[in-house]
Image 1: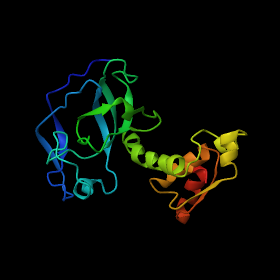
Image 2: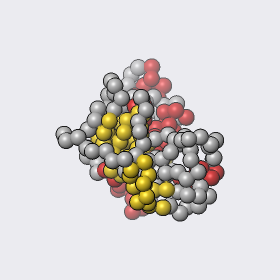
Image 3: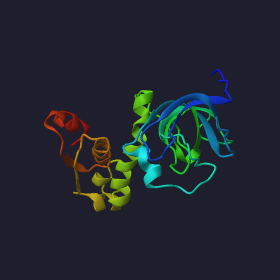
Length: 215
């Protein structure tokens, strides 16, 4: 794979006012971030906007720091290609990834961004770049709902296994309000992956779609 020449500046979305939903796409020289000893530099191919995200910094302000400037770059769900990696990283240059970067740092609505190893995952090749970028927040929310807050076993087919974990989850059912929504589709699929019986609500014209996911 040819090595990409990394410029000194990049295009980026900026949100000048955290209390405003207006964004600025600028050709002004926004510096390309320099990775630290534990960070990967990623070429962003697609970035997704999470519902309500543009008001997070207004409603949940972070303390001032160099990583949280007054005018900041939004968007935290992205898909892209690793350009540089720290030593011994399991994600070498050229790896195609998707990720949700930390809200405590500046966002990734730019041509290049920094991502830590713990935030990275190899993106599914059956999805487009844009589709890959829409997965992280919704899928992580569904995972936390089922396997953190509900305490279900995060193992494929766990509810059907004849062991301690399977017996614990055996016979449990999951009911998903809004099963065709952004988070609901992941709750349905993850619950079925874990071997649970799934029901839910959706509009009549989405019934076949939701049933196809496993409800």
